[in-house]
Length: 247
Image (cartoon, rainbow, N blue to C red; front, side):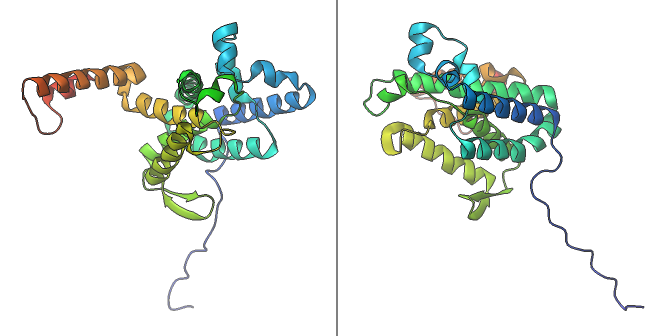
């Protein structure tokens, strides 16, 4: 008989485990749209997000349909891997209904941000107005910011090379997207959609029960009160009782 008990066998696992219903539906929908686009190439022209078509032609379906199309095999592969790796745990925690709602809101938010970027009067952002944006990256970035809020210290491989805490990972990719929108990165990647997914996801989750609308209202009212405080030379330390009641 051994003197000391044996150590339990070390096991290794990749990913979050078995796929959840909503994540499975999203992946199948994306794969189906990808295969359809391989056969009917015109699908991308009508279902991809082109701000010019949405505004001037009234093609209002594009902010929804664009997130199911992808430009190539590796584009859809990495997006679906990301949705599986980060989405499964979030869906288990939230439930399928809230997960689908959040995914839709961040995807739509990414589309709205892309359209707004295309309307900006700057040379660096002007091409976005007529550019076709496709992919689930905006919604995926929304999942990433949710993952960072709930599991801030979980390690994520940066550039698939070295692990950093999720909270820093999201800050870095958010900064990259912001600088790229401003003209510091290649225009072929829809950085506006990435940034939009992060912003809308953060605002929606931080808004509590009131959701995105409550958070925007709170930010506006806080900004307005700060202006009044500066005007009348009133200063407060930290978040006041009035601030806490806005939610």
